[in-house]
Amino acid sequence: MRMRSRRFVLLSTALFVAVVTLSTGDRNSVAAQSSGDSVSSTSGPVHWEFKPVIAGLDGLWHIRSMAALSPLPTPVHAVASLTVAARPTAPMARPPSGAPTFVNYFAPEDCPITVPPSPTPPPNCITPAVGSTTAAGHDAGEPSIGVDWKTGNVFIEAGNHTLRVTFDDSVKPATAIWADKRSPFARVSLDPILFTDDGRLGGPNRTFSSQLNLVTSELSFTDDDGETWLPTQGSGQPAGVDHQTVGGGPYASPAPLTRTQYPHAIYYCSQDIVTAFCSRSDDGGLTFGPGIPIYTFASVDGVDVPIAPGTCGGLHGHVRVAPDGTVYVPNEDCFDENNVDRPGVAVSTDNGLSWVVRTVPDATSLNPGSDPSIAAGANNTIYFGYVNGDGHAKISVSQDRGLHWTTSKDAGTPFRVRNAEFAEVIAGDDDRAAFAFLGTRTAGDTQASGFPGVWHLYVAFTYDGGGSWTTADATPSDPVQRGCIWNQGGSNPCRNLLDFNDITVDRTGRVLVGYADGCTGSCVTDPRQNASTGPASAQDALATIARQVGGLGLFKAFDGT
Figure 1: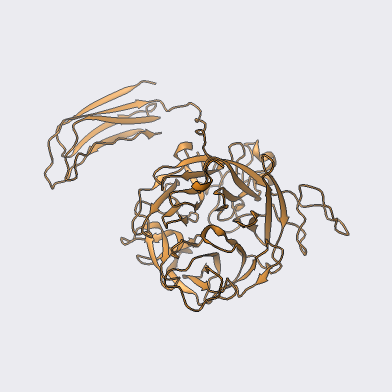
Figure 2: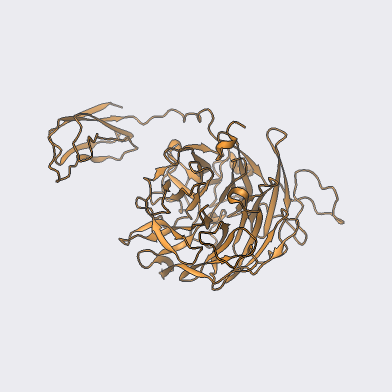
């Protein structure tokens, strides 16, 4: 491999183009730098910025310098150098000292069925709930996760089953006891959703289990960690037939006068054939008001698409409420004011009575793609994580409810992630947040049956309000999936993980990610296995919790504890 350096002299800030031809063998890495005078502007000196291009393609490469026409360009002298070098082959650097680390806890197998039931089942197994033949630990696609801040108990729900996990931190690493605490009112499960109204925003730690049942939901809740459940109305009307979500938080000011002593508003949102609705409960989820449209979309050739600026199509993500009561429902495919498809969010500042859609200006939609995710910090800074149109895991920050956004950051860069799925975001202190996603270093069509990617769970943390992100591989020696991840519904074998994962935070700031592990048993070490062709170990959906055990959490008050 030859090292090449080409230098160009720039005599003016008027348009300048340098054309470079790269041949086979040169394409691995391209880097550029500049030196010379700064360029004048109305706001002061502006210095050039060149970035490395990894895995550049053969062909013509252009270096451009552009100048505005007003004020007139200022003549300068500058030198640009282009260097072509071999792509680095050294192994990835280990995470820096203090970087977040995780331990993964997998749902154990069902306990043996005995008649009568054994009063002391064997350790490390789950006794199925009454009326069930299995705890469904291996049927955990699109899980939801929540944590009771009073007791520390964690819940992960998929299908009809709500699994409760009790961690014992008196030993290192902590041990976990799993129990099937399924709601007896969770009968039909067209879509499962769990939400815990935890103490982060002053909630009473009520946990809701929602099972979609056509245009309503079999919604029940527990105030004692699954020992008893109470059924509710389920949803307001009208409601949708797909992809429901439940969330809650403080009321926006002014709060409605007719509400019970339950401190928070509870929201139920879902999608119908052409409209998405959200309804609000003012009595802790027992009853709901009318469903309010949050946007309308059309179906073109069987694909839901936006129909005008300020509308969205496709599936929305999980509803989240900020400390100031603003309600957010994220969506991968919204129209901006120029009718360009971008990830965005439906926003309500009046307790769900009216909605407006706001998009991220440097984001592009990925179709078919997975849900984006949004979360608000303690002072209402919002963090929006999504999979960009190029497949990369991106995250942007807004200080004004989505009116303006920071330049999106690529959270997968430290691990050279080329494709991502299932973005999930949670925030703590206003300047701290975590962004979890599945990622693979393999480029290409992730929907193709022959896609060879190996997927891991990554979690990126910010401690400076999104200015920088520290990313950790939460499953460094255990792939979450081999092969494709299908995002288009139906019964494709690569749809074992279904549509999303989930993320939460406990009272000490520890991040927990609930996900379905699609590669278990022999799949972990056998690269010949994949989700397209099997065997079953490569098409699993095992309920798993990645629990943070090292590094800084999301609350400064617990740093160093």
